[in-house]
Image (cartoon, rainbow, N blue to C red; front, side, top):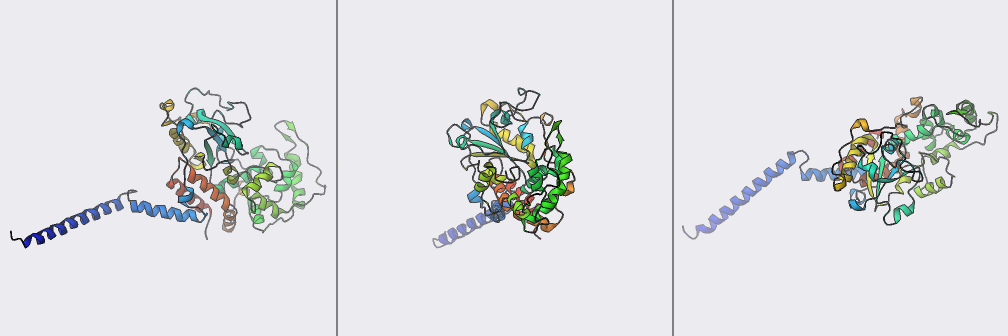
Length: 397
């Protein structure tokens, strides 16, 4: 072969080689783009899309989706029961399902704990509800390293808390309310009144007349509960110091106050709503410092998350290798979140009122998403589903 043809031949080979590589790369890329969930570029787009969705709550995946994982041998677990999220059900499925000050174990289960006891029941050592975890339990070495908690869509959680605490729902909840509670809630005979008042559109601006109307109901409703005699409310004719309903509604949503300010007023007893409305996600998040490991059981997926967390807590520990999922018939459920009288009273039927409610709970929604993002047992798909659930409850137009 003439020497002058050698460079031409080499050049042709190089061109052919690059052509083959380009064709293979194109085919591989096309394969990735059509494979369900397998495309790297698709994953990147979904990641950016999710980052955009959380940004309206002043959150970013890079800053807030950081998970702390504790070596299994060092784990010390506590259950933080957030009100109206399914925590009562979990509490009766664990040995230490009552306040840390009580005698342990404390569960009402009567079927014994030897057969098929779950890993969560064995490993949770303390329980906190309507209170913060003491700082000495969080700061000292060999204390709580891992927090297990329950959550729920914050819109649904707040409505459930309002209905649960309302005196007009006492026939369902079997709770007894004192005169002060009747006076406070007399501003808000239903959820619509509460939302409007917090937005400065109160239908009952001062509750003196309405208090008198409801007090007669309190006279009969709260005289006898569970066979015990309680003091009667004072006569209807008594002159009542009026309460500013708008101011009271703003306090119910924790508006214009920081979580620490709300916490201080709740602890010293000056807050008007020392109940599940004031003990919201923002309050409980004070007991979830970033260095603590976090497992989350979602109200909407309670038993799936329960089994998943049990698996995660046992898969690297030889002590629990033989653990298996607890059959459904062995689970104990305690439902105190859906017991309503006059269900229409606890609903909003106007889209504007629904938007107002979402606006009032903006900080609460943000904290809820922060908990989801930190959960070791949840991922970006779970976060996306949580945001979609909120979007369905919060109409844009």
